[in-house]
Amino acid sequence: MLRALVGASAALFGGYYLFGGMGGYSRVVDRSPDEVASALDDLDIREQPGSPGTDPTRSGGVRPVFSHARTADGITWTVRSGDDVAVTMTAYLTPIDDGKRTKVTTSIQRGNAPDDFVSPAFRSKGITAGLFGMALDSELDKLTAPPAADPAKCVAFFERFREDNQSMPDAHRQDNIRDAVGDVAATAMRLAAFQAEARRIGCPTDGGGDFEPVRSEMRPAQPDRGVSFVPGEPMIDPNPKPAMR
Image 1 (cartoon, helix red, strand yellow):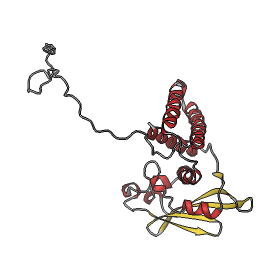
Image 2 (cartoon, one colour):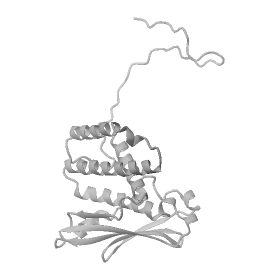
Image 3 (spheres, rainbow, N blue to C red):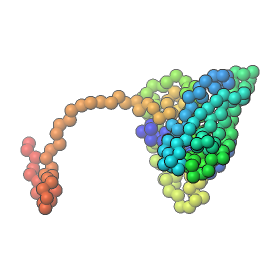
């Protein structure tokens, strides 16, 4: 259930960025710029929904090359297609409160690589911004996560959110593009509130934590329902024998 909720969150936030509803990325983190930079060091946008940039058949047979480097004011990730640059994504880390906290903002710059040799996720600055923002949030959430909550409490919280979402039938029906855009915006804001509350109480929001151990158990064999696979004959006996008691 948790993975489904996180997947829905990622897809809807991506759509919201695509429509330009969230504007530029900005977040204040209660950590120093050095701590934030260290947390972002292993950020990999290829781990975002759809595994962007991992399928060379979507970029003219050219496999993108990913790299990142620290700069004087942040970190820049570069995606190359051969000798050309597909896109550069920069996270600016601005110290505030005497360096005790950090303001994170971003910029996206499309490179000179032709669209035919660039993965679809990196052709549009809007889509790239959405994926980049989600990747940043995921890493920063890990950095600032509170102590883990009781698993039972998280299960109840996620179940309540699922039930509340299902009780809103209009969100599952789009009559026109205006309705669809409005539903995406409303759902994105609802998911943002859900994720913020989940983080506050210590429940994971990164797709992990199913809260239930895998069980291995033997079950009794299913009763004979008269199913057969004899060519030319019905697969199910129309007059099955009653079960023995």
